[in-house]
Length: 250
Image (cartoon, rainbow, N blue to C red; front, side):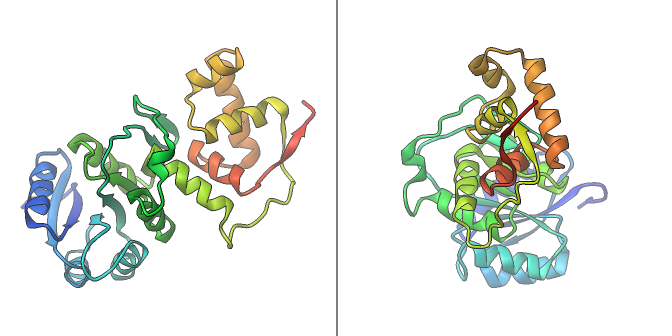
């Protein structure tokens, strides 16, 4: 198998047919090479230590661990690897948050998507443990491949419902540091931050506020500069941590 220049991927799922299907799908993607498989947490640790993958595609229900424990074991065994967590979930929500922009045609963020004990809850725990990708198993092959490429490049690739729940979880995190109020946004900038947290695109923000998309882009650039951040997801996460003061003067 030629892997030079390819993203080296390990697929971990206890269901053999599912695992083999994932392998076949990924083997058809340019620039991605599957270098290992695992059907349990112990097997995954061993495989990671042997092949040193770039990315691990991880079933959150893998036998021998759950959610945060699984991600932590992968990162302990192979610190340079990135993790894309996969979870089962019925009902499709197709929006994906991919810094520095929000992509995806659907922005369906329903209350039912955040039900207690849902797949998103487990995905949130995986993200808090260090995973950079979070998808359900009904995602398309293209979405999974895009997630792998994104996390390998140091980005996040998170479904919008999961991203929203992840951001919400930061509000209640015991280790979240309150903002010191040293960065003050204008009223308009604060409005735009709020709409970014809600998952709106630049076009949707422009329509909601009655301004041009270019004006929105200018505001977002100014917000990023003020907060010293590198993308929309970071803006949202910073906002819910209380990382800026209330509206100030222009």
